[in-house]
Image (cartoon, rainbow, N blue to C red; front, side, top):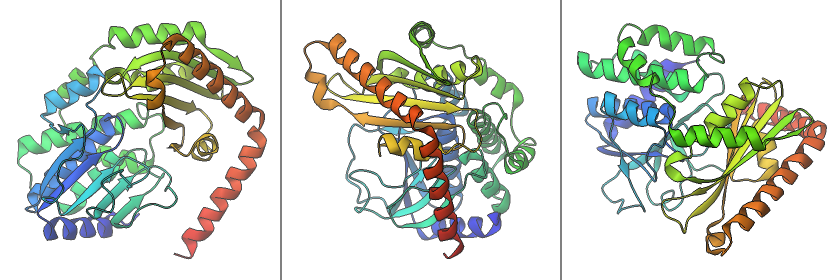
Length: 363
C-alpha cells in the first residue's frame, strides 16, 4: 500500500490551504476522535488551522476520558455556522464524505476511512478508503510516520496514545487487526504512554449502559442464528451504549449475527432516531450490503455495521410506549425477513463485490 504517495498528497493539500474543517460524522468514537486529532496536529505543522467539529459530543465515559486526558477539543454544533472562513472540509472514519448542508458549499479536501466506499459520493481531492486496515487511526499513524513530522515530545506522546486507543477500539482489542494495523502500532509504541492509555481504558461503564445491557439480555429475541435486542429509549449522550451491548452479546453467545437497536433522543426531545448496531463473527459476510438492503441510511464494514432512520415526526406521538412497541415489532420483523433471505443476500453481495472489484481494475 503506497502510504508514501498518500502522505505526499496530504502534505500538498495542507500546505495549499489555511483553514480546514475536520467534521466528525455521527457519534464521535475513539477512532474518529483520535484520527481527527492527528489530522489537526499535522495540519498545524504545515500552517493550516484545523477546526474539529461534530453535531454531538462523545457519549461514553471512556471517550470523554480520552478527550480530557489527551487534551482533545472539538466544537459541538447545533447547526452549521457560516462556512466562509474554511477552505474546505475533511471527513474521517465515515463511509461517505457527503454531509448535509455542507457538501457543495465548500469543497471536500480529504476523506479517509476503513469502510467500503459509498455509491454516489462527493468529489474529493484526497480519498483513501480501504478495508485492509482495521481503523482510520492506522492510516493517520502511517501518515505521521511517512511525513516524519517534527512534533515536540509532549504532542507526539498525546497523538500516539490517542491513535493506539483508536486502533485498539476499532479492531476489538486487536482481535481483527491486520498487518498494517500492527505496523502502525509498532511505530506508535516508541512514543505512546502506556500508563495514560491504561487509565483511559480502565474507566468503568456508566450505570445507564449497565441498565440497558440488562434490558437487552432479558428481552433479546433469538431467531435461527441471529440475536436481536431492542433496548427502548436512549438519550443521545448514551447512544454508544448500543454498540457496546452488541459487542457483549456477540462475545457471549454462539451466534452469527447480533443486532441491537434503540430509539435515540437527538439533542432534544423533538429529535428522534432509530439507531441499530450490527455485529458478526463472519469475516466474509457483506454487512454493508445487508444493511443497505434494509435502509440506505447506514452501512458497514467487516464485522461491524449500523443504520440510523430519522423519526422526528413521531416525537409528537402522545403515547411513547405504543410508539416503541410499533418500532420494536417492525424492526424485529424486518430483521427476520432479511435472515430468511440470507442466501439471496449473500449471492447478491458476492455479485456486488465482484462488480466493485471489476470497476476498481479499470479506474
